Structures are given as C-alpha cells and as structure tokens.
Length: 386
Image 1 (cartoon, rainbow, N blue to C red):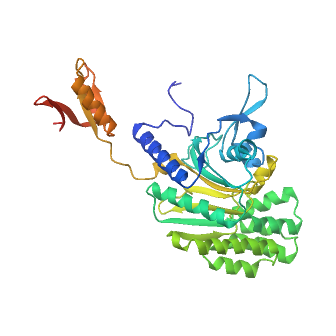
Image 2 (cartoon, rainbow, N blue to C red):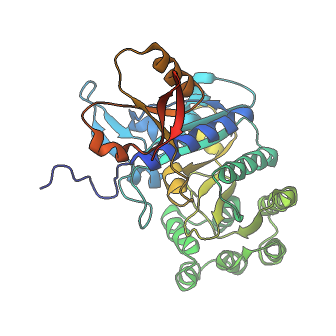
Image 3 (cartoon, rainbow, N blue to C red):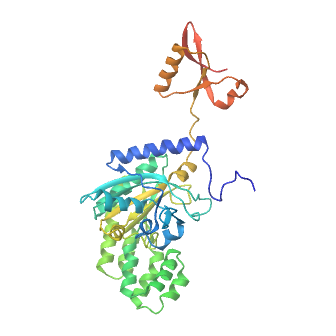
C-alpha cells in the first residue's frame, strides 16, 4: 500500500488552487464584513449532542464520530458549520436584537454529496439571527449573489421554495412520521407513481395537493397555479405571499428566479423559505440557504434565523484559472544593505520576491520568476529575465 495515497474523495490543494481559494476567502469575508457580518471561528470538534442538536437525521449520517480520550464522551467532526454558529448566537453572544455572523472553515463528510464532490468542503457562509421577516431572507439572498459574482460567476439563477407548504399539507392530512418520510422522499425525487401510491387513501383535496407539488416548478406562473391547485390554508397563503414578495424585490438583482414547491432540501432543518443558486455550465448548486428558525429553539433559545453557505473548493474548481502571479528573483549575496532595502520595498509594495539560494541554478525555472533584481550603476533595479 502506498503510504502517500489519500482516502477517497479527499485531496491536497496545490499552490495555484490554494492561492485562489485563499484570495477568494479573504475577499468574501471582507464583503461580509462591510455588510455588518462579524467573523466567528467555531471548533472542528464538538460533543455530538451539541453538534447535531436540531439538525435532523441527515446531518447525523454525514458526521464522523469518535470517542474523546479525556471525557469518554462521543465527539463529532463538524459536517456543517451553520448549527455551530446558531449555538454561538444562542448561548455565547446572548443578544436580543439582530445578530449578523459569518464564518469560513473546513467541514468533513462521511460520504461525498455527489459525483466528483469532495468529502472535505471548505465552507463559507453568512447567517442573520433575530429577524423573522422576508427582509432578512432578501438580505442574505442578495449577499449570496454578490459573493458569487465576486468569484467571477455570472448568469446566475435562483431557485426558491418554501417547506411550509409541504409541512402544512402533511399536518392537515394527519400523516404519521414513518409515512411522512416516504412522502417526503417521493416529492423530493418527483416520483409521481410512488407519490400517488402513498397518498391514495388521503382526502381528495389533500391527495391532489401533495401530488401537485412536484409539478409546481417554473417561473412566476407557478405561484398562480399553486393558488388554484392547493387548499386555501392560511399557512400556504402566507408562504406563497412571501415567495411573491421575494420575486418582486429581486427584480433588480439581474438574476433569473425560478420556484419549486417540491424542493424540500433540508426539510428536517429548514422552516420556511429555502433557496439555491445555480449558474450556466454548472450541474450542482453553487450555494444553498434558507430559513431555520427552529434550530435556535433546539438550543434552548428560540431565535429566527436565515443564511447561506457555499464550498470554496467547488467554486474555485469551476471558475476560470487566474494568471500565475509574476515573481522577482533576487540574488543571494553576503550582507548587502542596499539589496535588502530594495527587496523589502518590493515586498511591501505587494511584489513576490524570491531569493535565489546557492546550488540550485539548474532549477531556477521552477521558481516562476519572470523578472530579476540586477545591479545597474550602483542601484538595484528590476529587469526582465532572459
């Protein structure tokens, strides 16, 4: 067995990709900061009961677990940073008003989320706590779109759903937990035959409403269709009203908006509006988000919450490669004050200067320098390499 091989769906980041990821991480965190989002850095490990509180069964299956040698308790390696940030808001910062937080860090998944997806995403995101209206949903959606444009991704479109529609129908139908999971999977997979079989014994209006959900996907016309095809429950009226208001408010965002009332991603975690950003040429969602008011309650302090996250590794892997940064080669000489001052000045100006250590003349090309420092008329100047 080759000792240098990595586990499946785990990979190293070489200098070019690592530099692009770090530059984008800094730029996005700066963007979040100027919008009032404060950076937090949760730990990689937590006790499982804290890490998974309020997140549902799905995150449990994605979480690596191990026994703490100090306490004997079960630890989890985080598979999602969002619940950790919710814990920080609920218990450490203890604010009563609006709280905006952001984060960036690696997470680990037991299985990849899809074909050619890493098990070690570099998750970055922003969360807004303490506000229950669509104004905060709109704020984080606009921030997410701005962050993707910062990465050079254009032709974005936003898919929006609302889990309250499905939840209301399930509750009104009195569907038990075991059957609810099966109905959920059928709606999410848009499996019409399986769904029809599962709901065949329900009241006619609820049966036809649940069967309609996978078909209610498209543009603004979907909301009008939903008003006609779904029961006139207050919760559903409110959900559709929120979706219409979001669409109206994002008209100036330069983004195509689609609706999908059968999109139940994060159903056991999210509580209201859910959204995903896509772009031409990408098969996977580039960023995901939604409202998750119930997670704060699970931590013992109910707090409205909405936010989004994305994987910087995937964003960088699917964006155009930036030009290699030009470097300056400096000679290795005995103490030379003038040369050292020139090197320091160049580095302070943002230039990358590499000192040419002795004995490696044959491998200078590997350093990636297209210029060098040369002594001309008693002064060290930058000239092009041959």
